[in-house]
Each structure stands twice: as C-alpha cells, then as structure tokens.
Length: 106
Image (cartoon, rainbow, N blue to C red; front, side, top):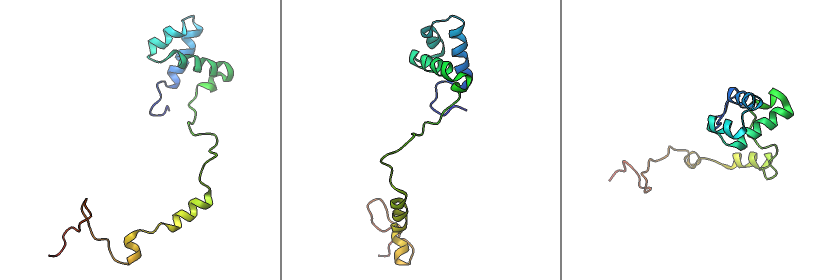
C-alpha cells in the first residue's frame, strides 16, 4: 500500500513501465497520469535495475542518523521529567489561558 503522499500506486508504476515499453514517450505518460517526467524516469530506472521488485513501496526512513540523540541521553531525560503536580503530591489546580486559577474561592 502506498503512503499517504504517494502520487502513484504499484498498479500505476506497472502502467508507467508498460506504456513506455509500448512506445509512448515518458513525457506523454507523465501527462496522462498527472505526474512529472522525473517520476516516470525514476520508476523506469528502478524497474531496469531491480525488475518488478523495484516498483514496490520503500520506507522513507533515513538509512542513518548521525546526529541522533544517544539512547543513554534519551533514557536519562525520561527519568528526569516529572509532572509538576505529581511532585507536590496533590492534584493539579485548573487554570485558564492566562494562568489564573479557575473556580478559585473568593
């Protein structure tokens, strides 16, 4: 299944390849399907190098994240975060947008 922002599905990608192999120009195919020429060339390149497996959805997750927060730092941050009201032992007083207490006694 294609992700939410994908312009093509597996069926459309197979259709792109089939139409170009049938002799249609990539620009014509792009116009017919409402996608860019670059997208047509991308799917053709993947099909030529990987076959039909190249037309399947891929993860958009990065292969590596060199600046990712270390697991030790993440764990220590989770331990340090304590809800304000839980530290006092009582329930949290309700406040409005300005920080004034709601339902305060006069």
